[in-house]
Amino acid sequence: MTVTPVTPPVFIHPLADRRGVPSALLLDARGMRPEAAPLEQLRELAAGSMPCYFGAGLSEASAQMLVDAGWQLAPDGEIHHSDAPLDAEFKEVPGSATWIDGAWFLAPPPKPVGSQATSRALALKLVQLVSADADTHEIEAVLRQDPTLSYHLLRVVNSLGMGSARRVSSFSQALLILGRAQLRRWLNLMLFSAREADQRSAMLLARVAVRARSMELLSKAGGHDKAHQEQAFMAGMFSLLGVLFGMPLAEVLEALTISEELSQALLQRSGTLGQLLALVEAAEHADLLALTRGLQAVQIEVASYNQIQADAYLWMQAIAAGKAGPADA
Image: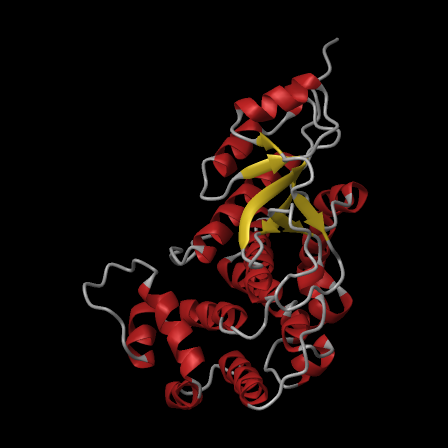
C-alpha cells in the first residue's frame, strides 16, 4: 500500500534589513520532504518582491527542491538573530550581517517625550474613535492635529489603486472612496506605520499585516460569514496594540468599543476568534504541535493553511511596498 506523504505546514519569518525594514523571508524547512512540500505556495512567495531564503541542515534533495522553487540558501553569517531590543541605529548588529531575524521589534517602545508623547496620545484617541465608528468629523479633527497621521493615511489610500483618476487629499474623500469598513482597516494599519521615531514600526506593521490577513482568511476557510471574517481581521490588528503603545493590552482595550467576543478572544484566547489568534501565534513561534492541534480544532487542512500563509505574506509585501489594495477575503 502506498502511503500519501503528509504535507507539512509552512513556517516563515520576515527578515529586516539593517534599517529595520522587512526586506526578505526566511523559511523554516526542517522536516520538509521534497515529495510533500507545498511547492505551489513556495513558488508564489519566491516570485514576490522579497528575496526568499532557507536555512542550512536540509537533505540535498530538499535543498534542491527549494532552489528549484526559487528559494536561496541563507548566506552563512549574514543573518543576525536577536530577541532583545536593539539600539536605535542598529549598531549592535555585526558588520557582516545583512539581515536581522528574531523578535527584537516586540520589545517595549522607548518612553515618549514631547511631541512623541502627544502623537502617541492622538494615535490612541484615533483608535478609540475608529473602534466606536465615530462621526467622520470627529476622526478628521484628530487627524488634523497630527500631520504625520494625516500624511500616512493619505499615502496609504493613494497607493490602493482604487480606480479613481484623482489623488485623494482629504479624509472625507478617503471615506467616500473606501467606505467605512475598509477605511477602518486602513486607519488601524496606518497606526503601525506612522511612527518614524519608533525603529520597530516597519516590522510591527509586517507582523500585524500577516496576522490580520491570516486570521481573515482562516475565518473564511472555516466557513464563517463576512462579519466574522471582518472580526477576525480586527482581532489580528488589535492583538498588537499593546506592543505598539507599550501598554498592557487590557488597558488599551478598556478605552475601545469592541464586542465581548472580540475582547475575550484578545485577552483569553477564547471562542473561535481566540482559537484563530492562538493558531496564528503558534505559526509565528514555529510550534508544530500547537499549530497542528489548532488546525484540527477549527477543521482546516494543512494545504489550505499553507495557501493562506502564502497569501498573507504576499499581501504583507504589498503593504510594505505601499502597493496593496483592499483585501478581499
